[in-house]
Image (cartoon, rainbow, N blue to C red):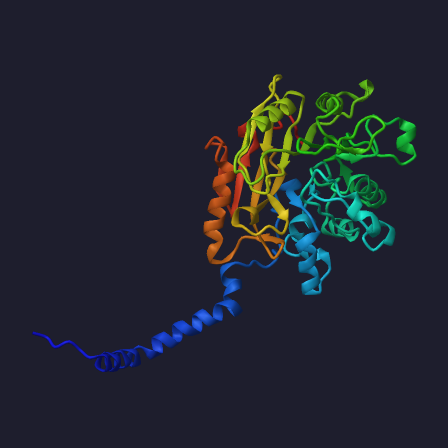
Length: 424
């Protein structure tokens, strides 16, 4: 029968065993202590890439989701003693090597250094909203410096401070070398009013892909509060209120109409749309109805945002056979929300290739310290899997592949942009 050891004997035995493993325990302790200093780069971070565009890409358009440069995004820049441009440090090469870049800007622009503005901000807050956010004027400089060609202001935060935010935003975007869609002084403005500097909230902005192919882009929000909606003689953002859906239909049809019929002769029509349910990874019935509506009247590329999380990509066929690819939500891109789903992001890139084919690819991103960067390190496989699984969930398996760290959707197989050709 074995003798039960006393406490003193057990302690001595533990000391002997620990002494034999002291070196191993010391190494483990050093690794644990080193993680805060060295492990972040290994597990999470990515350095800015040096080459993001293959030689076979003739034309590239990059698209991103929700951006805001106020609140904790601004605080993070102050803490790091860096300009707000820091938020684009890791993604700048992707934009620099794109021909066109667009996204959703989630806040109004307010000059809080102006004493008159600061004095009335509290009173200007809309009382039927719980959250009021804004960015300062240098946010527009950051977008321009990053390489954005356009942003949509048609969302549920653009008028958080009522008419003050509308007037301030219009003032600060007026001379910016960047197109803004979805916000304006009114709708259906006369040529004379536009020549005098007024902006139409429902205006389609046009740009050339090449000498033969033209694109149009417009901003619209299905998520808004009372007092946000632009209409004839009233400024605001482009919403369904006051026959807004009918106006959207007219603008889409006009975009693809011939020039002699007063149309824009656009071959590709892109729609920024703010819609859906926050933090829900999946489209709702209204999104599906709106996507069908947009496809019916000629939309080709639909860029969704608002839910702050990535949602599946779908393809919708319109009544005349036109097929639209729908990014139901591109998630956050520059934001300060802290849980995993809201930090998973992507850059969508529409490529026209030199062999005449077209594809939409997604570069997986993760937001760290309010800044998006490409996934990397030991967590890359896991994060890419989550991001790609969400985006491809509702696509035909024959349409997509994962290559070179990207999710690629073959638009020719999906029947999107049929007949649009930029190579000779």
